[in-house]
Image (cartoon, rainbow, N blue to C red; front, side, top):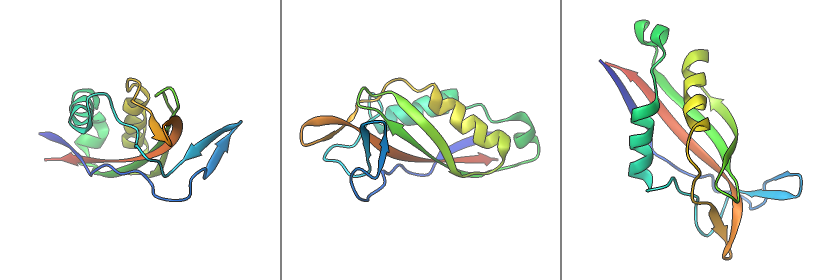
Length: 128
């Protein structure tokens, strides 16, 4: 039996405007964090429904945590997805694939304005 577990959600604390892409600043600390539509529980449900454990990884009982980071844009779109630390190529690719297909999020806010925010999402892959 395959089991997908999420290792908690968190955003990076740090200095605002840590990154810049074109003229858009990407913040790591905001007044209101971006949110998956429907909240954290809805995100867990989305991931559980959409992640497909890679066949060879499951067969070989490959498991572990994929630490991903991405930007939630001012309009709620997800972009710049990267794997900060991974498990193996196919498991890492599956984590990125499912994040790419996420619906638009509710954007983060700073001083009442929508802003782009860097978001970290650790995903645990476990085989039972």
